[in-house]
Amino acid sequence: MRNKIPSLSILKAIASLRAMLKEMLAKDLELRRITKTASLLLMSGISPSNIPQKIIDRCKNEQNSDGGWVAITDTIWNIVFLSLYNKDMHQHIIDNGIKYLQANTNKGGLWGRSSRDMSRITVSGLLLAMIPQLQKQCYLQKIEELWKSEINSITYKAAYTLMAFASSKYIPHDTTIISDTISWLSMNQRQDGSFAPWKEHPVASDVYCTSIAILGLLQYKDMVSIDLFKKTLKWLEDNQLKNGIWAFHEIEDGASWGLYALTMLNKYLGTVNE
Image 1 (cartoon, rainbow, N blue to C red):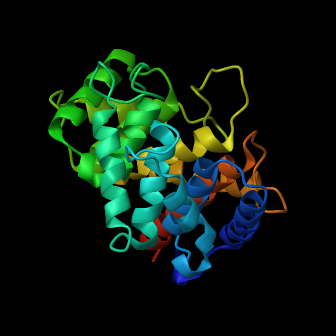
Image 2: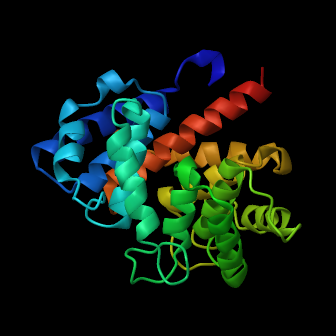
Image 3: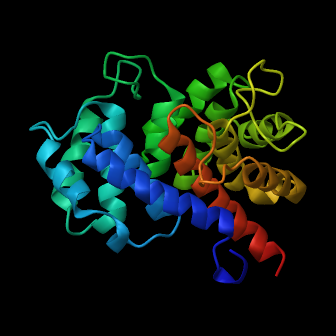
């Protein structure tokens, strides 16, 4: 971030999300929503001391005997949260969660919403991007094959694939798949800097599609025009509501990803402008 001082947009989003965390805890909402929000706050630079202890307590109390929580995605976010909050202190819980994920791949060898579900890039890509212990060649090859079967389909699927590749430093068998994916995703940015499921999709752009797409492209920023990043940053800032969130159905989901995208864009653009 420029001069290491968070922008007003970032500060507003953080304040709003911290208030949402407290509200979700008070209402005893599903743990996945809470740990996802907390994780993206931590990834955006807030201190673990600003995260309520009650979330840790719920993670401990709600983990099942098989190591998992409600289902695959819940387990992913709870592992990510505990790893970010204090990995050493919660290593046993994390390890059991990872064993659950390994034991609950589907028949295709990846992950969906459950072991009975189809392989989903939105689940498998997220998992492989966020959990280094599972960044194994066998899974990464399968995510490459899955994206090749769906290539140039949905912007956020392209982005999750790029995140998984970059986080694991995976070298695909298809030598052009990364550059082709970056090119296609870049071309699907709308004129105002935003993203939808694809450029000509009839729905309006939203903070989720925009944030995930730009986070995917930031993994390979040297292969992307800086103007593309500047346009997305402007869209995120211009479309942020006064209370720090964005118009999106699951409010904290959109705001969490929006905050993280703002943080990473500011960090990158601040370095190139110094």
